[in-house]
Length: 369
Ligand code: NAD
Ligand code: GLY
Image 1 (cartoon, rainbow, N blue to C red):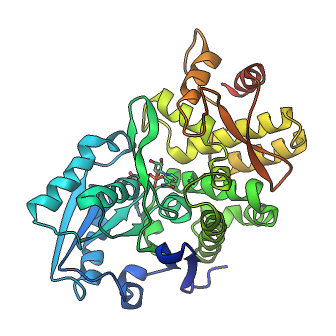
Image 2 (tube, rainbow, N blue to C red):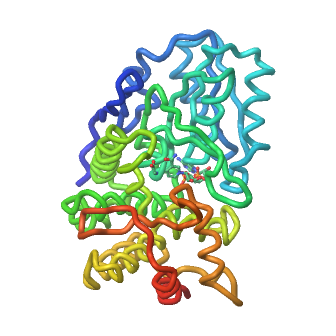
Image 3 (cartoon, rainbow, N blue to C red):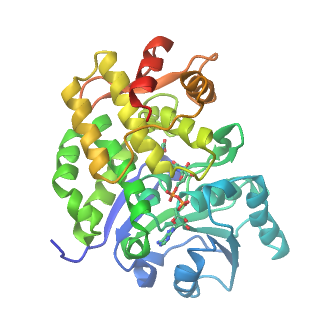
């Protein structure tokens, strides 16, 4: 199964903020992927120390016909740098280059670069256009789409940010060839997520094609990215600002964010924490009567086979469940101090609800290494 991945488009329908996601191999070098960009005197490529040496020149070449001036800022790499200090480097570059409010920002990298560039675009001169050029699997199937932008706070993940949609998303599948296997697995975590919350046929497909996905087969990746973006587009198109439905995209994230914050940003990859968090959320769903133990086992097996952890870390030897609960209270879904979880209400169907502390403690006890 190694047929070349043809160019595909997924449309995000958001009225005047609608945009297209282009998905295909070799798009950085394909002029057709860069037509009809927002017009401006200047573009700023935002990347990091790992991705810029690999792909910034190609992006620069693609943008040269469209912008008289192309600037670049290279951020430090890592989740631990997703903060105010690093965000400020983008503003420094914009101001030092005299960038006006038409300047277009291009986020070249994974979800960290994408989330920070989007937040910078939302706030520089109260809003400038930006384009997502995601280069990790996770960013191509999730973070580059839907307009959530943010930085972390030491007390909570993604706690400071804005909803701000890109003008376009360009997913060049060829960039995934340089992605380390651990990062590929992290992206698989977010792909798997779409099955239990919305599309059981997609879950069947992932189980069947997991080997090809882990081997970076172009056709398998193209299908997984496209189907993931379609599901995300369907959800975001109905609930852009997460007043309801969109929260289902956070399946596994309440536990996962607690793991990321509790372990220190960067120790567990976001996709790893989400993978393990989905196992925990499935266990909670089973205790709440939404799915049976066979389904929990099926999901656990798939997360494990994707190369992701299924046992959660101990965050506090003295009061582990208490520490998880404390961290999970700092969650955007919490209301009045009550933690709300995305749980399964049957395979392929998710909802948001609170759960008794005692039950959550049981899950943490059962899942921790
Ligand atoms: P990341 O951005 O840290 O990228 C992972 C690593 O891969 C980094 O070291 C990066 O430099 C490197 N890399 C990127 N592309 C590469 C390539 N083609 N070849 C080699 N190395 C490459 O992590 P991520 O998993 O992409 O994103 C995680 C972030 O996304 C988290 O901060 C998470 O909160 C956020 N996120 C946001 C949303 C959203 O809706 N906005 C959704 C999911 C996750
Ligand atoms: N990744 C969750 C969302 O975009 O809503």
